Amino acid sequence: MQTGNDTIAALATPPGIGAISVIRVSGEESILFVDRIFKGKIKLTECNSHTIHYGKIFDTKNNLIDDVLVSVFINPNSYTGENSIEISTHGSSLIVEKILAALIECGIRLAEPGEFTKRAFLNGRLDLTQAEAVADVINSRTEASLRGARNQLDGLLSQKVEWMREMLINTSSLIELELDFAEEDIHFLSGNQILLNIESIKNEIDELLNSYSFGRVIKDGVNVALVGKTNVGKSSLLNYLLKEARAIVSEVPGTTRDIIREDLNIDGILFKLFDTAGIRTTDDIIEKEGVIRSREAVKNADIVLFMNDAVKGFSSELYDELAEITSEDRIIKVFNKIDVRKIEHSDADVKISAKTGEGMELLFQKLKEKATGSQNYTEKTAIITNLRHYNALKSARDFLTNSENALKEKLSGEFIALDLHNAETALSEIIGKVTSEDILNNIFAKFCIGK
Image (cartoon, rainbow, N blue to C red):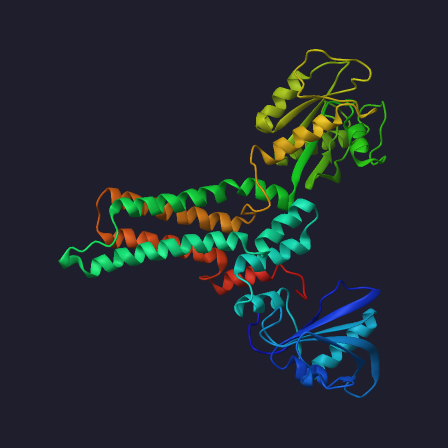
């Protein structure tokens, strides 16, 4: 990815036909370049920041392209921290193409994926966690994932990481200062106080590390496999949950032969449902392949809804087989068809009727409990959803443990200070105080063009 001071442009709205399209331009000369093809009541170079102007866009041969509204943002008060222009035009792919071509002729180049946000990071408008949250906000599919991304974008995680960094910097600075006065035997910080500081930071890190599984759930959703023998009501349950006849329901065994994938939103959590083929021994080649795929879906599932027939009873042999494929704590034992036969005592976690809807609220509750565990997070709780953050925090914790052990073993202060410095570096990588160009390119290359 290029990171120069040149001027870039890209379509910021989805491609295709719509009411309007917005073209974003950024760079120190962006206002000057757009002024060459824009004609309004005043020149854009004479406009104040955060103002909108009506006019017409012409190509470099003075042919009219479209009527537009142009928004002006003067550095540093823009998304990127540079001079920026947003051109709102009619939502025609041809018009967008012509305007971009005119901008290129003026000396502007097309932006690469994520380049606007990368410039915002490099210019200090966002730290790295906030920049990553921009992509998460765009990709949010549920209320919970949007709320989590917004918290990160607003700096909730950054503030906690910055607090830990500052405490480490202060602690290691005092240890290094003591080394400079070693001959005078001057102590600026007691060993007990250093241990307390380290323990305090480790506790904060542990809270964040423990939030990772919950964070991944609200960001990416949960894979749920509907598994059971033939004709236990897997497809009927899927149809009930989706409120439509998505899967074919029949009394003929083996009707479902391939996996059907659908999404379900329960209280802001995305559940990715996989309706699998009934698991049984069969000579049918196609159905046999479906059974193989069913077992594979169980391996990849975060939650397994093990469906049983209330009339036929619990399939203990199949349950034992599932327990060998996945951990038992991922399995929810569901008894279906209680509208046909009521069950007083059973091995069921949930008793439902996919026909009448009885027991569905309890099923939803069980799904949410399995997905989120016992965590009790509020909107003001910092959580992590990113594997990069998780690995950096884990690395920081390991260095802190090393410094703790060095202190207890009464090793020289150089060893303690070095490990504290390494821990601070690991935390700095999270917010981008310390990072490599390769990491930056990898992060921003996943963004859409125009953001």
